[in-house]
Length: 547
Image (tube, rainbow, N blue to C red; front, side, top):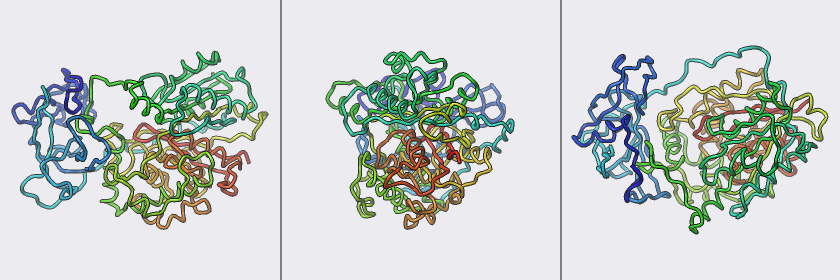
């Protein structure tokens, strides 16, 4: 089923037909493992709990608990004009099963986490969309369900660390701007040329290429990947890697480190290019037709078309459980803006007050305009080299102390961690299992801030404060200022410098560890934590100077 004249619709297959058509007789049906009776969603060929292969379908009661909701103001869809409520509910029969849906037949102001909800169906062509409304009778609010997490972080396989064999030797960035209106590949080449010159290398020295997300239909999120760059420059790498299913945008760096440590390459050029601002303008002008696949999946039929819709509900649950407020998030936005004021390459440099932050137009509750990063055009390149080769190059090498990559929770956005950005807790714990350094040793933190709440999640996950303690840690903003306990996103972050999807954070960490930050330089910075991700499998790096 392609998009209809109304809202986007899912593609009905043999595997999901029972779900999307079950409303024809008014019953909600979910896949069931007949071996252990667990409910499974989305449908799978195997049970994630007992690994059994005998799968059936169970009709459930249609009652659920409201575990998240966000009132969307910014995004509108055909057949679903803003404002509308994107919600998540947990089924009463098995709260591990969460459905993304719309809350209907209610005043959004009267919704509260823990409310009892019941299914109502809306037919759109041959799909029956399960929507949910509050039940007429409401008892005490239910507790939020528990997260599914792995039992433990796996120990190191050996005491020999691949991180000890690699170093970062060069960085470069292209021009950065809102609508540069230049071919994205030209931005990639510009950043790569700058990184190679920064390292004192030549193109002939480069024997590896790595990127994220690689070639594919990524709209304004890539330039064409390894294929495009190799075709333009004729590098002929010994090793190459590109793809989206890696450790976030910084996954290209970790892949490059493994290749260098394993002897497949000596100098790997890693790059990341975005041209969202120009892409959006070209779509608006009708010069580009955005790709539209035949399947709207499990989220888009309900208007959950942005990462904001999922992450806003994680933020809401954090507010509910820990007393976090919008002012808490505002401290992150204000910090990034203050740092951007000292960075001539930042897109947004004008002063911002808490009133400016709180009064900005709403995007999707609780997020306002300044909770969201800045779409832009730009490219970042980073060179990973073997540590033996690094010491003879133009700049002092930046060493890699540890990486964190382990997944401890479900990957699906609406099935994952309730109160933090998905994919921060496991990766952070994994990082600290690979080093004797601790959070108190970190001099500067460059933490992913696609939204303010991403950044808060990393602060807690990495142990710079306890889980649920960000409200106190961020109070007043002093702890994250450049002269505070944890200088944070010193170049302005993605919230003010521009959305470079994590690689800009790596670039800034190297600048800080080299002491090249100018007016924004953190005195004596020797250890930096850098995270990348944002509702994808993510990763985190711990970098240090060579002294």
